[in-house]
Length: 113
Length: 114
Image (cartoon, rainbow over all chains, first blue to last red; front, side):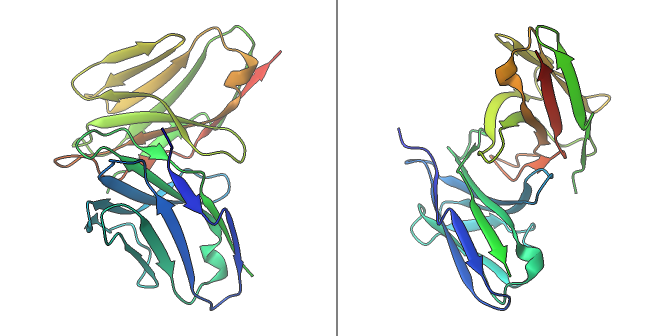
């Protein structure tokens, strides 16, 4: 079946602008995760949804970052007042919830100029 | 929070030889340890995982071992092939009542020399 998809694949924005990144999980996966990967580093956990609620948002770096999953499927990561340090690849992953295997999407490369 | 250390950062082996990548973790509550392979510009792909109730797991040329007492786990690749060249990441998770966020190591760049 279809894997995790993310849009857009690339996003270039100016410092101070607002951006939204979208994730479509594997159908039927109740758990959804957002990670951020900087060049040469491993993915860094941001937030985890079980269903519609954020079960763990301890990885969000500050209050400029927010994520929603209103219907328990598609999720949107929102970044306000973007800074150059936000430039990274934003990865989304999903899993069947009580099973641990996480499957990643292709990522959105965010560049803040 | 959890901290995962991974070594080496770069590993070069001859084709056909074995490769071993090692990771340590800090939180004794961690109970799920996956390994991901990431090719340049691609998404991380799950290649094998192990849970804390087993000490070793094998899948063809790939094996993972876990030592909960010492809080370390290792990835073993035998009979390496050119297509094994990639960056490999270990990760750990506490998995409170289900899945939760993974803490990743910094990665090992595996180079298979022909």
